[in-house]
Amino acid sequence: MKNVIPLITAVLLGLAAVFAVSKTMKKTEKPEERTRNVLIVTAEIAQGELIQESRIAVKAIPESAAPKNCIDEANMSFTFNQRAKRPIAKGDYLLYADIELDQSKSRALGDGQWGVPVTFADGVLLKMLQPGDDIAIIGTFSYKEKVKTGKNADAEVQEMNRTVTAVIYPRVSILEINGSSVLLSLPPQQAVALTAIQRKARLYPILRKKKDDNALNRMNGGKFEDAALTDMVKGLQSIAIPLVPTEVKENQK
Image 1 (tube, helix red, strand yellow):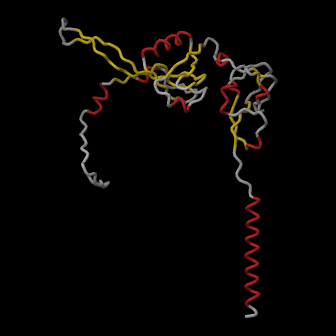
Image 2 (tube, helix red, strand yellow; image 1 turned 180 degrees about the horizontal axis):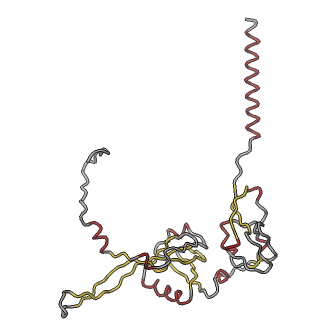
Image 3 (cartoon, one colour; image 1 turned 45 degrees about the vertical axis):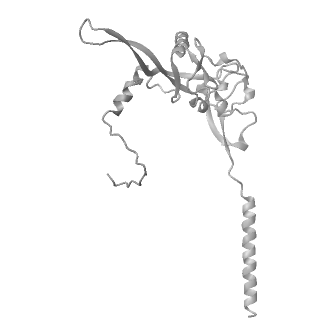
């Protein structure tokens, strides 16, 4: 019995030591540091030169390593066409102190471009977008079509109302978002056309991949008419919902 007591004491002391070391290690372990997406310069920018999107990239760095007043990815579009206050070397972080802030809306317009305000029928997607994103614009509108009631040359002609959905603009760039409205950049003639179109059609934004040069012809989108919905269900069997739903097995036919 005398030999057992020292053994038990040694085991307890050992467990206490292990517990103390484990607790100390947990205290010294540092939580994983959050990262921050900031802007860096990919090509040298001279003093007074306009900052272009092609010379800026996003870099993820530890939050503690982020320089003071560095610009985050969320504010990237704000830097476009701003003038550099000083020469900025390739690889440098882009800081607010590096740019001359011009907050006018027109600064984001390219040469020969006009800013067009557009209100969309459904603004759900706009809540997920940000300035600088590319979108396509889809429009749903009605028009009248003259249709002959017969095959004869003297057959009566009637006007029929048609509703169609089609691509209006395959790709436009967002300058600013305000609720369900956006400010877009377009050439003058297209700006005039869109101003008129939005009085006649319900417009919807569709997100596009940035700088995607595919499907830039609006004819690629085709058109969708209400009659297509009727054609779509032709030949389908009607489904009857039972008064008391029952479990349907996967292998049941």
